[in-house]
Length: 280
Image 1 (tube, one colour):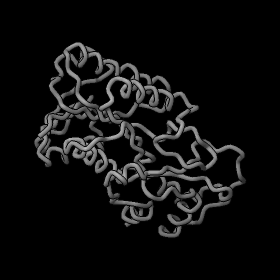
Image 2 (cartoon, rainbow, N blue to C red):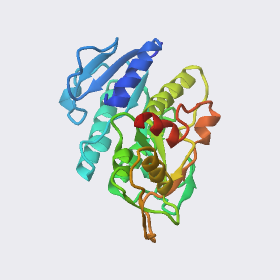
Image 3 (cartoon, rainbow, N blue to C red):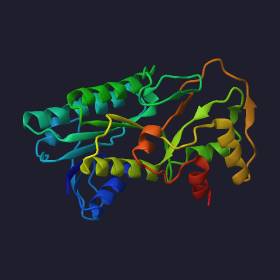
């Protein structure tokens, strides 16, 4: 049994807490707001990680930390609050007390700056252009440099219950580039939870892990293909062809072979597997 702190208990963090608790681990969830009364054997600590005062009474004797915090907005200030101030507050708190738990840091494939449909994996150059992605990448490096046992997990576009942006988009007959293809990458929310729980159990089993894993399903698909398929399944008007752009931001294909070679099997290996369930 491991003692685990999950920092950030939104949909993924909360469900992960329940999974790890059911697997026999002692789990504490750190939330900025008070949790629901029913916690399924998960303890909760209420704090804003951007406030050192809020963290004064935080227990520290954890074996593992999962950092799954989302910024309030898609702007530089919100990302700095989380990935600089918040992360530094936590690191200082544990360091000053002499504790060194291993981190699982949830990152994003937005740290890749490739834009011409290239394949990317964990060894590909990560040079994001946007400041928000730069801040995530800098936080990655800080944790990786701190301890070789810390692990970064880069999720691609997350979808699932409550994350139905593409369904709403498909219903609006969007204008989509068809040629050259603009690739999209995604992972179902349940696979996000599955990947994190899987990596923890592999670590506890004594299996040597890499410092970085790219978590995306098996099917990086052109947006035209995805929108056309969704429109057909929902009986909506098909998308309209958009003139090709010379430059497309974040147009890449994510290679998940490192994660699969470790033994992870995706519950939703392609977008059709996950979206057909959401449509139904």
